[in-house]
Image (tube, rainbow, N blue to C red; front, side):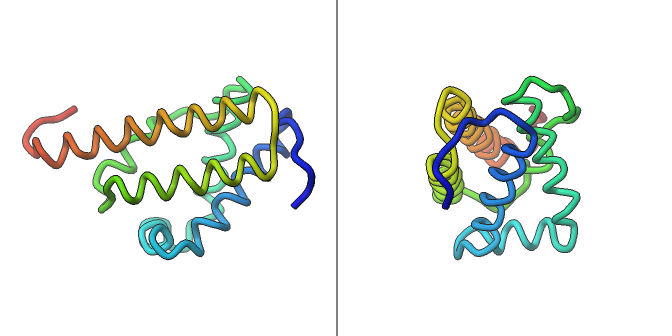
Length: 130
């Protein structure tokens, strides 16, 4: 792995996203869920993730969407979110340093907490809409 650097450009975002999802696709727990949902549409998914993180971290507004709803009915629980977050954190820490790297980890943590809580709410209240 290269020495950690700042997250400053779209190329940095692509490195983060590509490295992270390469790990997801081979993770024993997470790969089956991601591969079943995404199937052969990985290039489309990765492009969305580039735009999402570019918008979030670089404040270059290229992502327009609602990130939660594609995840609402995934068969995941706390174990999955913990594994996802651990892989994301590991990837950021190996590749990047600085304020944007810390922000990426913080935002991923908040997103995991929120998505997990929303999915649990949906399961506990199947007749209520968020």
